[in-house]
Image 1 (cartoon, rainbow, N blue to C red):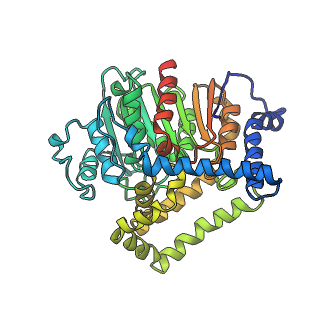
Image 2 (cartoon, helix red, strand yellow):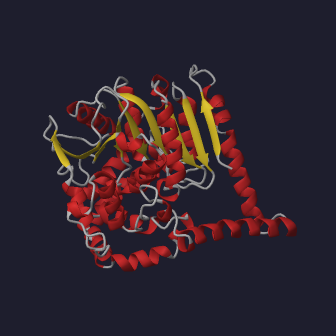
Length: 436
């Protein structure tokens, strides 16, 4: 069962904090215990009847995901933009086309043929042409999209700043944005601002005098909002973006009126990455060491270029291979997104180095002790099996924030929940925004 809990504003003093946080995570640890029992049953450690029942449950879970992905073609068939609309195409080009349909109007007006081959890249090029540029005071160029209605959003109530996960592109949000248009009457009237972090994608090159940090990204977002004349806005964050959104809400409480925090951490991300139940001794140091060494090895030996060239030359082949195991996520959108993510990460030596530097910066970012100072309402979304930004971080986040918090934990949701259940997530987001 999914777990939803509302938490009201209360004192978050340091006294008794460990016990309070442990109590907040008890529902999660109960789920972990159930999963462990199920795995023991599947392995035949609990007797014949338990083994039979466990294997039937495991088989039903796997069968459901297989059927969703290959037979029902979900969630793409449910992403129609509007009642009676066409399903989103599960491809990189299809995701970009849907973004165009939602925010650029008719495809023909964009010189994009809806019957064109899905690998041409025409829709992606048009989406990139919609980008705007802002030159920051230190000379850094910030690429961003400013789409949707701009009527009456300056004073609050209409604008949403989307803060990406590390390495995520605007197409990542297409399924969720599509479903939000379907389930929310107010969403099509909201202004949407999406930006690329400095040093990533079209916010390159990185300014020489700039060090990559979460605090700097939050400052960039604040300056962008000021430049666009936004006095109040909501922030919609995923993964890395959660830490940036929290820092923005801490630095500029007058700007952020509400937060949607999807599968992020409470800072010091390397203490959580790949560590679902608790922080593993020496694991943060090992991850930090890997982030320093891997770029040096990949760049010095030319492996980055070789791997990227291979991926780009044989994209369809890698997508076919990916379908053999990525169906375990239960989403037909995962395969093209996953292949493209790796291609983007390795697109150039500079981009890959900046990517790894940003991952290291997430580990250095400390904000947990200051979370009670953030008083705006928040929706915190997680998935029990998420091992990239473990669900325990979201439970801690919900317990530590100073304002009213709603926590939603989907027992079947991985770190890529925005691709797995965009319609369910859209319902939660729309309901939350309508209330605040």
